[in-house]
Image (cartoon, rainbow, N blue to C red):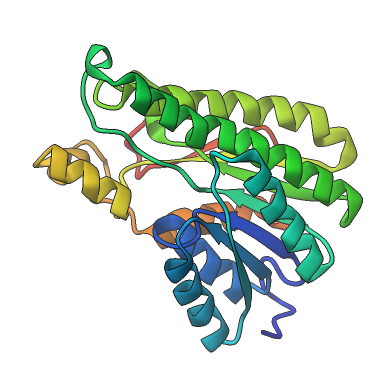
Length: 256
């Protein structure tokens, strides 16, 4: 798609968790804003569908299978992006998993280990590979990690999920300090309640969740995934060139 005026015009973007929800919205938006996108997730059918939608709209998209719990898979996905496009400019580490809601003492050890592997170790692995790729190709760039408003306060319904996302905030800030001198910016977004497949699964376990979240949000509604993707696009763009180390709340005021 020829778009010299877009927010991400001319950039190459790598997106994890791109088969659905916020990641799929980001893929569509980033391409619309002029980026060539590489979509990564575990489910090929979902990736193929989103990539075809992007191309049908005139955008440039490829996809690669990627399991965030597997370091070799993560590194290979980032390497594939460079092989296809020749470089990496920006990355959105959006992919995540969720575990059954409930008190901390009722969480299963296997669930805790799984959410750690995907939601914390996965972004750490991805950031390390992305920094190396940006450094070796584009030279400068930006990374955005998808955190959660649940990382900024106690999270009794999803304690393990909140803990991993809070750790992602810390990794984000550390990376911003470490790689800022090289011209690589690292930020995070902290979405509030967003209408994704993940939160619908939570609603199934906790009936009435949507109503509770909306009531606790000054805007009195849930977010559309595209609204979250818009914030990520801005942080990845040159228009946020002096922003790094931030954890931006995109929550309709719920954390105010």
